[in-house]
Length: 149
Length: 206
Image (cartoon, rainbow over the protein chains, first blue to last red):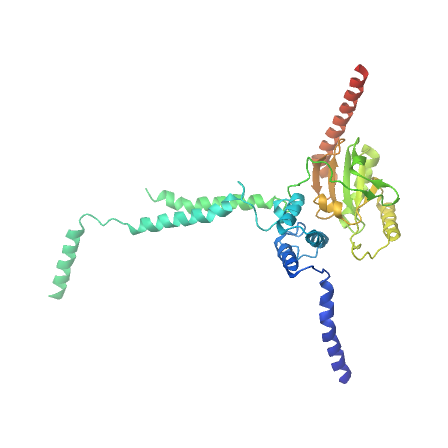
């Protein structure tokens, strides 16, 4: 039993160390670290489609992380790193698509939808009452009176 | 009468959705717009895989139409296409150059020796055939990144002026060669030949 507990303790003590191995990048400043985390979350892995490069274990994602790191170390800004990747992998590589003719509908679609919905709602509201409304009401009143008697 | 167009709206939306999804069935999500197409090769200076004393630069691609094949021994599809590429080299005299990169070689913590990599390459080429005129060793995988390579195998068709004319992701098999790459390659070779003839003839008149 004692051996088992000792083993467990050893495992739990060792665990944080194995995680630390993942953290092989060292940064000059907390801001640089922040930029790195931001960029690897924002850049998309070209190999595995729907993962960012921070998530992906594909070789290309490893290489891109390494490149992001070295570019940041060289003092490049976040935008410069994004442009560097876009120059090689196209707009695809960034999770924030630029507004172009092909992507315009992403922004205009919801606006269009809201406008159409508003028009429908407003039109529904302004239903014009029939012209012989007064006569109909009078008739209804008369029927109600009759009911009472 | 007035109600008919309103009823049609869901139907039209549904049909549009059907068309959109139907197109999706035949689109290849890995097909990216290549950023290097119609550009010259990015500058590099890399060693030969087998004879590291030799260094290659983009200038080595001038004067001959080339298919640059990005590959590695760890890549299964590369092994599958290798016999076909060898056939192309032997029967149609296609000039294929390898851009080799290794997966197990972490540039920061190199774990494999060059001789080990060379051994694996020799073994693989011995088994499946050697289609390559020579192999460039992309040690740090920087050139692959510059070329927008996402994995292996990938191919670049480079014309005689050293300009990339096509980026093909995936293997080359008979169908791809006959429909996509072969016609372009042959047209470029013909173009290069006529260019040479023109040069000679202009030289002759001068």
